[in-house]
Length: 485
Ligand SMILES: [Zn+2]
Image (cartoon, rainbow, N blue to C red):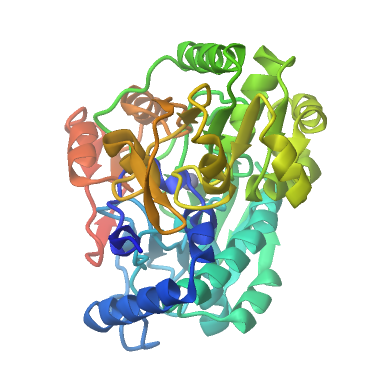
């Protein structure tokens, strides 16, 4: 048994492109003693850090009505990455929540309790934006607004989160009844289609990041606000770019404030070259990748650049891809996605998994080697030095991938195991980097720019690019921010 299981994962950057399920799932297949230990430790942790709500009594939301402009009240994700939730309200009494997630740390982090709310916008289906939405619906009967693809993928994410919470023994604040009602609480909208919430008019725009991810434009009687959500202004293999929009107030993520991405084409070329090198020496390239976005990007890149390779695709990403196939209006070059889907060999059984060990490439979850089929494969592939592990995203502190990079060791089914294979890492993020954020803000031309969803260093770095036009705002969770046109 490794202490590793009990260490909270530090929150920064790409952790939030991961899927909670795949972060935790297969580490749970170990012995029941481990599960019991984990459960006890969760309980101890939660007894000291209050995370479950006492509905109506733990909300920090102010009672006073808004006099002018718009009030933003972050329940989470204001001065941190992840567990996003922000209530917007103006003097008309129109009130709207944007996102309600949980951070997939160990233990998970939750936003503070949401006040009664009729409408919530769900920008996209990553768990740090949707994880707590069933609680909203169960508690307040909230209507969830999102794109059709976000709604479809959310069900899978919630079911998996529920399953993992039971296995790991941490409290979740919502149960299967809440989940069931949440499935019927969606009102879906296409990009560009106006809809009303109270006295406001809203419409979604493509955010980049992952297919179905939306920015939301909000017209109040006084002003126009654009909420960027997780976004990218660069084209990625499966989704087009976010485009700027004139607004008075821009709320934008700051995950990559102060950090630049490498050139995307060059990084993809470096990745493909490394895969070919491994295959040419007779090895298998094991590519752990996040289930919602990164897996599919990797497969599109390989299909385009090296279609002669035999590539096997395993894990929850396969089921997410099926949703993408059913919602092709959100996909960049959907024919390319279909071709990739036919080309990749889907692992559907134990026999398929054994066959995959003879492949050229295996693309699978979890992206940070915290469980999932990736660990099963690594345990078998680790004995031949021709094989390699190619990491395709940020490896959070405390994750298996980080441990592999730093110590050449990681937990496999509870045993810290030496891995002598070649390990490389590639930066294929679908969040805007520093320059992209700066350009996007200038192109939107707002009076105020609100930098949220970033750690202190990142938010300060991006805010430093602006002084008065626009005025940078750095919100803090639990402290209302009132802005006027
Ligand atoms: Zn995201």
